[in-house]
Image 1: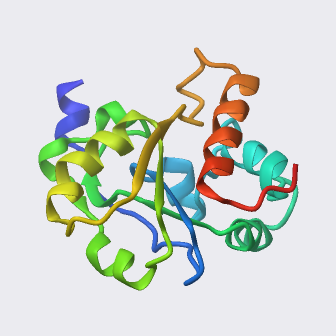
Image 2 (image 1 turned 180 degrees about the vertical axis):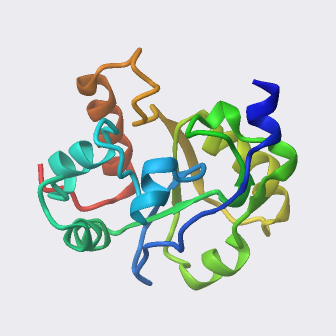
Length: 180
């Protein structure tokens, strides 16, 4: 394990997927290996993000990637990750080397997206990284922050129905436009 941690190369995340009218921001931590290889958010076949978004906003996994992103935007959802860069061997959030983690520029992003009132974290690592690296840098501005069950295949202790219900409730409360 020590050798794997020593060999971790710096990773760089993706730009945000957003429109100026976004009301909700969904944040992951850092894209996994498969996502980085494909250049797409939540690309791992067993990740539940797209199946859940398919059921809630029509962003079905069978749709072309750009169309899925358009479905999110049409629902008032922006998508990004907390971390711009970090070192991490493999894909697990628990393997992120916290001392290497650098956050994205949320001050600029939130200034350009003033309608965002709700930030939803896709799992615990996204939430803890945001609290540690981002929240102290933001101007006081009222937003709702909520951690949701991770859609990662590593979070196998919670089934699809449980995750779907939690995501549905959070997106409805945030004012996203759901199709179901």
